[in-house]
Structure formats: structure tokens, C-alpha cells
Length: 251
Image (tube, rainbow, N blue to C red):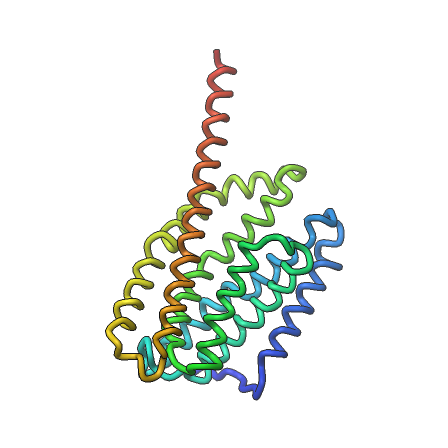
């Protein structure tokens, strides 16, 4: 059975409005009982949950349904729709950071760089969505676990259940994130670079565009690897302290 997707002449404003509504609903309704300093991050997690896992399935569908799929093939209508769905999310989350965390230059830079890749693919060159959507799927496949882990982390100091969820999720989340960002992501970026460097796509994707894409993704992956490495170190230190306390207690 073939799945039919609705067609919109200009879906970006609609998607952005939906993310805005969801964010405001999370901030003022779902997390109204949370401390004010925690509500922005929690609301950001909600819209990330609404984007991440659906984006993986939508991106996969958009790639598989493209009979001419290649790193430089023309974008299909469904691929453009998925790009717009993601552009709306990153725009909304960028607004969130600019309002509540204006000095968080790392995340703001990340969102701006990601938007550059999506916008140039969608509105400038109209080609290469297959490569970009594979990267999107790889980036968002850890979204569900990461957002649940983030929400649990925010309340682990004052809610026992949150602490248990955080402890339970940390190792598998770190492991999955490490595999995706440390191995699968770099391998795919290498394939992109080899393909584009051959010059076969220069007629439809200018060199400065694909070089920018590869550079942005390479930097993003490098930062992600450093981030998860620090999490592994922190987890090791926490578990080591627990073991040392248990040993001292037995003595």
C-alpha cells in the first residue's frame, strides 16, 4: 500500500507554527509545575521529540521512494517537505536559544550551521537532499533516547524516579550516540566527500556549497564526539565513586 502525503504550497510557516504551539503548550501547561529555570530546556526537548523520531522515518521514506536517488539527484517533493519540516524545527529551537540562552554560542552556531545546510539544499541548489537526509536520519536516530535522558537529568536531583531513569539510560544512550556519531557519521561524510570531490556533481551543486556541507558536518560530528567523550568520562568517575563507597562500607 502506497502512503500518500499531503501537499502544501508553503508548508514551512505551518510547521513553524505547530512547533511554536507545541513549545508554548509545553512551557505553560505540561511543565508548569517545574522550576522556571528548567522549563525552557524541557520545552525544547518536547519539540525535539516531535521532530527527531518522525524525521528519521520521513527521511528514510523520502530516500527510499526516490528512484533516482544519488548524492546529486534532484530533490523530490517529499524530500523538500522533510527538509522544510526540519528547517521549521531548527528555526523554532534557535529562537528558544536566542531568548533563554543567548550566550550558548555552541548550540546557536550549531543551529545556524545546520540551517545553512538545509536552506541551501532546499532553496538554492535543489539537489543533494538524499545525502542531507541520510545525515539527518543519523543525527536524529538518537533523539528519543537523548531527550528522555535530558529530561531525566534535569530532575534527577529532586525526583528519585528521574534519577533511576537517568542511570538506566546513560550507558545505552552513550553507546548508541558513540556508534552513530563516532563511526557511522564519519564514514558517511567520507563517502560524501569522495563523491563530491570527483566533480560529478559540480554542474548542479557548486563546489563552495558541497565543501561547506562537508565542513559543517565534520565540525558538528567532531563536537559531538568530544561531548559524548566527556559524558563517558563523567560516567566512569561517578561509577568509580560508587564502587569506592561500597568498598569502604564493607570494610
